Image (cartoon, rainbow, N blue to C red; front, side):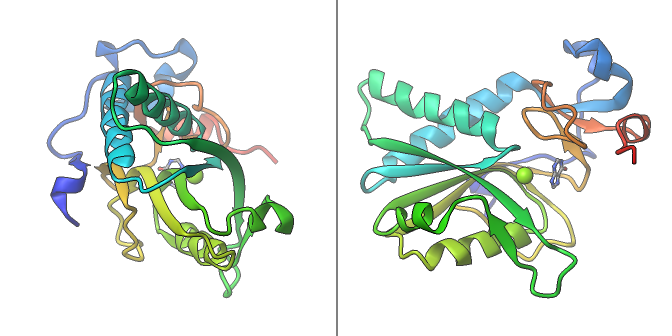
Length: 218
Ligand code: HPA
Ligand code: MG
């Protein structure tokens, strides 16, 4: 992995104590540390927005992968807009939202998209930027890309805020990456654990108590 393309975070070297940041009371006992403070996320998203505009070759269809990608998507689009008001290069944006369901237990490893056939046909000839929260194994993204390419877009690029350094990775690396993170389960900034923690600004590492407290109850 090219270390110049993203910020590499090593758990071993440093994690912030929860005491040093404002954490909602309801999550305080469920987290072990702050991995990426909200301000650092925002500064990094601003830089990614700048790179995306600089390297764009025409109007962009910015495609948010729900639900985890929504916060990164919203802030990224805002920074792309700000780039305009600062007199930088401009690029027209249209926005699309997509839910991806993966069936990882099936050998085909197929993914199902929430968009209709008609909506997918709209991608033909367009420059698409997929915005995702995290690449973990890379399986879902590889399948999503192969599915989208069937609709003959002009180009497809991927921006992921996080890439997890896991031995289960299939080697897929997005075009734009915010941070490479350790192989731990992270939450916050719209990343969830069983739908919780999306309402947390910092990206944090969940602890064992948190996993029990917010486990799915059947
Ligand atoms: N956190 C939240 N969602 C995820 C993660 C994670 O660490 N990995 C894959 N999906
Ligand atoms: Mg996700």
